[in-house]
Picture 1: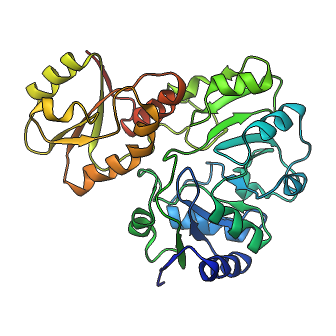
Picture 2 (picture 1 turned 135 degrees about the horizontal axis):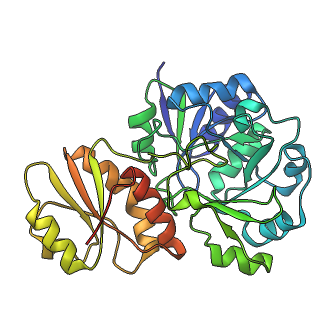
Length: 339
C-alpha cells in the first residue's frame, strides 16, 4: 500500500480518525515515541499492528485514552493506587496495568487478564484519540526488535508500505517508551522503567514500589512478558551492541584497543573529541534526560553509518538512567563487559 505522511493539523487528525474507525493501523506521535495505533477493542484491527510490526503476539499492547472518563470502559475496576498514579502523572509517560474489561480482546492483552493503559500528553495524540472516539492500542511504530522511532522520518523508514498513514507531530519530547507499573497484584511493581522514576512513583503512592527482576536482567526461562519491552533482545540495531561498564578512562582504553573498520563508540557528547575513533554521541554525561531523548536516534544512526560493532558507554542504573540502561542492555542482548 502507499503510506501517506501528513503534517499534524486538522486534516491529518480527521484522516487518522477515519482510518482508525475503519479498522486500520496508523502511525501517530506521542511524547514518548511514535505509536502504531489501532482500535484497541477490535481484534482484527489489532492484528494489523502485529502484522505491520512483525511483532510476536505474546507481547501485550498499551491502550491509550484521552480522558479519565474513558478508563472505566477498558478496565474491570480502578484500584486506589491507580487513582493516585493517574492524578499525579496523567496525562504523561506512565502506563498503569489493571484488570481488563471484557471490551479489551485477548489480542490486545496477549492473552492476559490485565490491560496496560496510559493517557498521553502529546496534543496530537489526544486529538486523534478523541476524534476517533476509540481507545487506541499503540506499541512503538518500529519493526519488531529494531530501535523505537522518535521522528516521523524514522517511522516512515520502518512502516512505509505497511500502513496507510503516518501523522508527523515532530520529534518526541521524551524519547523513551513510558514507565510501566502494575497495580493488578498486591504490591505495586515497576515492570519497565521510563521518564517517571521509581522514586516518583513511591512518592505518589506513599509506599514502596517493587522492582521486577526483568528490568535489569533477562526474563526467566518460560516467564511470560507482563509488559511490553521485557523480551530478551529488543530496541536493537543491526549492528552488534556491547555495553562497557566503567570509568571513562577504562572505556577509552578499551575502545581504542578494539578500534577498526565498522567499529563505533556510542559515548556522551563531552567524550567524543577525546576518543579518537568514530563516535555516535548519545546525550550528555550526567544528564539522563538528554541521553533518553537521543538514544533511539543514536542506535538508528549506527545502522545508517554502517556500524558492525558499537561499544556503548554504560549509563547508571537509577532514576531516568535506569530506563536508558534497560533499553541499552536489551539492544545489546545483555552483552556487558565490566571494565
